[in-house]
Length: 173
Image (cartoon, rainbow, N blue to C red; front, top):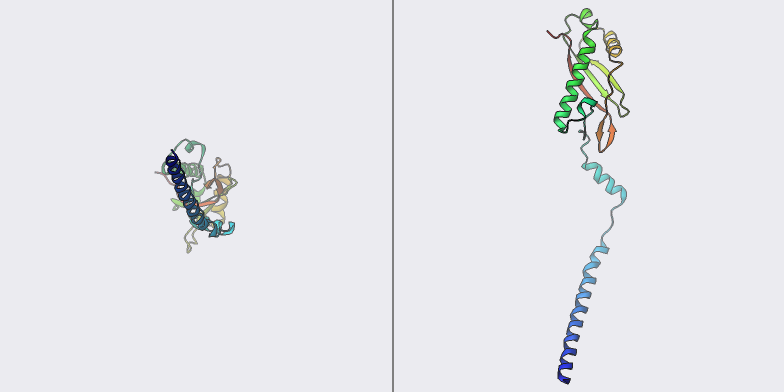
């Protein structure tokens, strides 16, 4: 019986030694985590900013009719189709085709601002002197002043400014 008690005590001492070695190992191994420097807030911010592709938006501008479309590409196409057809419709009843009968297509630079305001600018070739830019610009802005509401593009959930150039056909035959 005494021998059995000594044997149990001996086993207990071995387990105690192994536990002590294990705890010592854990303590030494965990020290490596304390030796590392914690990156600063500015460094983390700069790293995240480098990861963001600033040339593309997460969601393109949209109108109410296109909001129900889930596919990003289809929603974008819906928006551009709506924009083009609405501009064509508003300009079709205008004097542009009378003043400039040779003008069948006009490129319009559309800017959608974060506050959902819209700006339309006609685009002409650099060497073009055949058109009165001021007159065309004023006609364009007058006809498009009551344009339907457009929701701005989103980048990481934040409204951002977007610009694109749309070819608008004035003479639909």
